[in-house]
Length: 390
Image (cartoon, rainbow, N blue to C red; front, side):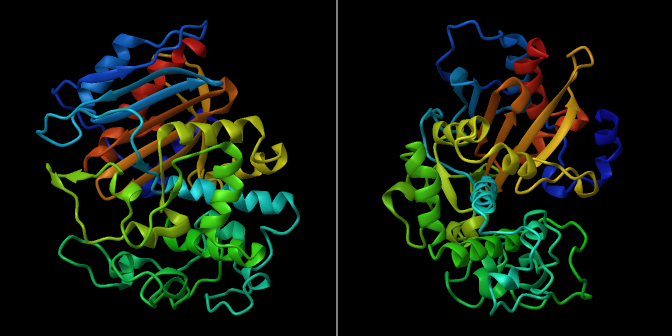
C-alpha cells in the first residue's frame, strides 16, 4: 500500500500538497504537560530539530488514548512580537469543520434517514443544483460533485478573496444559493473529476438541515458539543462576538491577514472554532465509537485511491515514516486552512493516537509539508512521536 501512495502522489489534491520550508530560527516552548505513565517515549531531539527547522509558531498536542503525551506552545503569537503563544486558546478549525459535517451525515446514515447514494433531490426537492437528480451525498463529501467554485466566477478583491467569502451572509452571492448556480464550464454529469471545494459541504449542510429540520449550528451543538461536553466549540457568527474576537488571528508575510473575508460564510465547510482540547475530545469520541457505529465510521474513513485517498470529509491512507525501519502506519488526516491560520488533525487508529498542530503564519501550508513525501513538519513530528511505537 505504501508504494501505491507514492505512485498516486500526482493524483493527490492541491489541498494536501506542499513542500518543506526550512528556517534557522528557533522556537520558544512556553508550556508542557507531559504524560508520566508508561506510554512510548517521544524522540525529543528529533522533535526539537523539526520544530526549529520549520520556525514553528503555534501549538502541538500528541495524545495516546485519553492521555496527553505532550502539549506545547511554540514561538510568538505575532511576528516580531513579545507575547508567546499559549495553550488553551481558541483556534479556527477551518476545514476540519468538514470532518464534523461528515460525522453528522454518517449519524444520519446510521439512523436510516440518509442514503449516501440517493440523489440530493430526494432531500432537497426544490434544489437548483446542476444534476440534483443524480448528484449524491457521497459525491458531495468526496468532492466529485462538479459544483461551481468561488474562485472561478466571483471577482477578486485586492487581497485575492472571491466575493463569495466577502458577501453578506444570506445574499445570493454566497452560501447555498450561489453554490446551486450554473458552473460556467462544460457540463459534467457527476461524479465529475475530483476538485476540492467548499460548496460541496455547504450543500451537504443543506441536506442535513432538510432531513433533520434543524440548523447546522443546532446539529453541531446537539450531536457533537453537548454530548461530548465541548465548551468552546461554535460557528463563527456573521457579526463578531466576544469569543470569535478572541480566536487566534492569522498573519501573512509578517503582517496581519486580510480582513476582507467573513469566516461565517464558510458554514458547514469551514466555520467552526474551538480549542485543541475540544478537538481531541471529538477525535477520541470518533475513535471510541461514541459518535458513530463502527460500520459508518469505517465507511467514512475509507480512502479512495482514484481520488487521492480522499475518504468522506477527510483523507485516509497508509504511509511509511522515515527512520521507522520501514514500518508503515495508517493515518486519517484532516487539514484546515483559512487566511493565515492552518491546522492539522491526524488520527492514528491502530496506535490509538492523535496529533494536532495549529499554526498562524501564512507559510504554514508549505512548511507542514507532505507525510507521503517524507518531508516537512507533519512528517517529522509524526516520526518523532510514532517510530518507537511501530
